[in-house]
Length: 363
Image 1 (tube, one colour):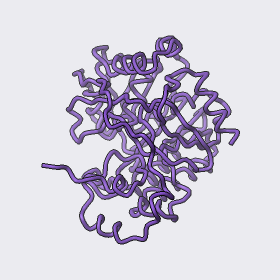
Image 2 (cartoon, one colour):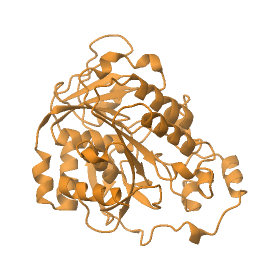
Image 3 (tube, helix red, strand yellow):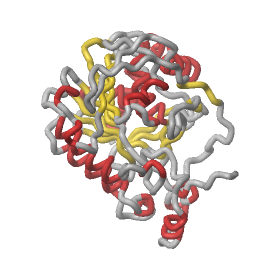
């Protein structure tokens, strides 16, 4: 049976940090179709979108033993090394970037960091976690369902990867023990822009992108060195066409509210505003499938400031931008838009990423 088309794609809109709009009910399609709409040339779609893309295995779902240390609502897990997503990340970086610096950076230990990843089982979050593991950076995950990590990251040493149970939508879940020793935070939570199955259980943009971010930021200790928040392009223009169509259920408005709360918190932050997210992994509802990412030809990175970019962003690129921003001092206190375009990209070369951020900074 043919799957329904994505509304955002049909309207040549840029989706936010949601993986699909396939479950959009017909009444929403009707409402959007009745809205006034400027000609497409005022909102150009990306040129030369590849029709045929090479598919490279990115994350293989191995099995690992999950052990709860206590019977409370929160839990930590103990991991032992096994076949990992990080191995696939290494393959993607080596084959698609073919960069010497990429290979060197992969094995550089970063024991001074403990990075808390929130939303680590989502499309971008999976790649963030796998890349941190590849770099030997100590990581901690905050998940509503810790068991989901079992099929994504393999068995890991508890010193390298820890999992805590918690829901950012519930302030009472954010116990101070979750943040003990954490030096950096990457938040890549999100839901679909339009009503879908992912909204089940009150998983709406208001609850995730606003209340969840607000609760998380409020719970973080002042000792945090950097908070990187994944947001979306278009958040400053959610009342303007055609962005107002994407914001029909408030996703851009609530993302901007989350951004503003982080800005006013006094914590050091960097905001990464992604274009329409492309490339896997496309999160399934049970996560028990083979997840793949497509390399394609759109590896080069275009960065900007001022919410002026229009285009798409590879999840691989967005995840890498989050990790790189942790160590680039001048990105603190700034928001950057990011797109993926055709050409060879920076891989995980720190110098190339610094130049990209610097170029955007001067705009």
